[in-house]
Image (cartoon, rainbow, N blue to C red; front, side, top):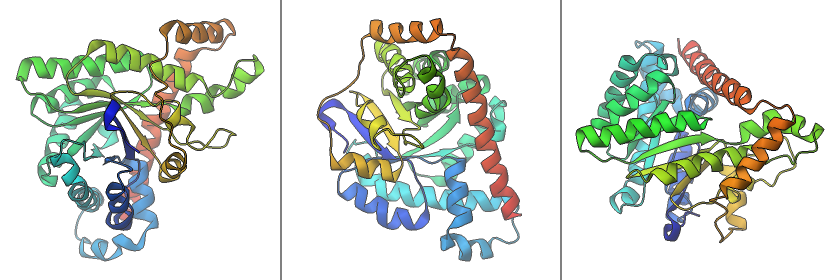
Length: 327
């Protein structure tokens, strides 16, 4: 559950029409989650595998594939925003995120324009526009935040990405005098899945690099004390290993942070909720592990760069699959 005493929020990383009307309502009423996130892969699975969209799709036959997708996605985001609105009105998050077209990730102007358009069409104050952390994305983030729009900077793997996102939000506050809620979505478990086997070969503890990389970014962002900016830990589901289902929530429990997780991960977490924050970690401890990994010949920077490229590609692939199916 989210914890107001340390300003820790738990958001559900899932959107699907039937779930919004039932599961999301229950999760918010039970005070388990206070926000929700989506991405192209989540929408792909929802739209292509659920019957909830059939009738609406039949009424959209004259539209282009992207127009059909946006009609479905926007309606879902509106529904989720309405469910979460009471929390937002209380000042208790209540946000739902929608991502811009991932194919625009290298076009600052187009990303900004699409973010503005989506925000206006959804017409809900508790919507965050999700923008990938690319060079073009940083420009778009600043423009959107300057316009008073809450932003979720996503696909963050490196401290440099996080710094550039934070710079963009700080600049928006300075130049526009507007302060909106912003989050930096740091992807965690993918680094462990990529490098755990190499770490095991070198007798380095597995399931730690993702946590320490995220903790390193958290330390750097918290030190800057930028108004209304929080680190959001994403990619926190456990896949294909022996880690506890709720591992990446428990190990990243931190003041002034958000964790967005799949439903099964959240269900596992609420069965045995920890009461002690695990972060911040001592910087010396983080640096020691990184030094050991580097000394073992494992290139963390190269791994993080590949994860960013893979993340962008996977979102583009999911988006293309949706559009192809809706043609």
